[in-house]
Image 1 (spheres, rainbow, N blue to C red):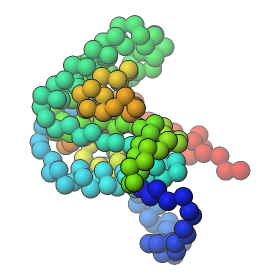
Image 2 (image 1 turned 120 degrees about the vertical axis):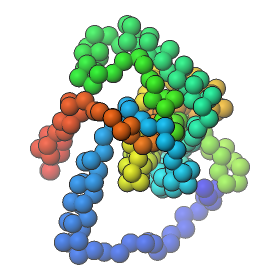
Image 3 (image 1 turned 135 degrees about the vertical axis):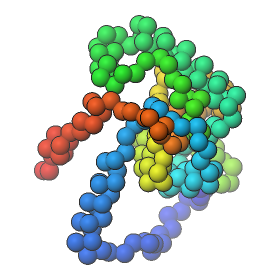
Length: 227
């Protein structure tokens, strides 16, 4: 991350214009691939090579961010003991959620998904990626910088990461126990960092299922307006 204050323009790298038909084909192919992504709660304990996860994290790190401060940190958990602590902390919050904190309307909305306070996948999956957003971070020169648009930046990077993991052939689950402050202590992150998402990834279990309700996606007419 540069600490220079001067604007130094450089020619746009990497871009090559494509014929319209090639653009159309690529857009179609990407949609055809990404629509096969499904949130999974049944994971296999099969190991996944670390370099695959690292490449996906590098892809996430290319996401746009406020002032290019890249206000994210990915704590990748593989140690079974630490995963056990994460599960214990998450399930404690989830029990409080399902036993009254959520409210009946929220619980009714979750009913078609079949979720409950049991989060065995937090120990079964080979990787837990805790995604933090930092209100402040240090530039390459060591200066402490205020970060901007942290939730938006972290959300975009998370989307990149999910797409990269799917492209690599892995299943994912976005888990958001609330509150998530217990993850700071487990991951050794400062109070300045806020955990946003606990991303679970690995191979799906051979007998993995998903709720039929999750297959329902809104058509273009309901998600977009052209003005």
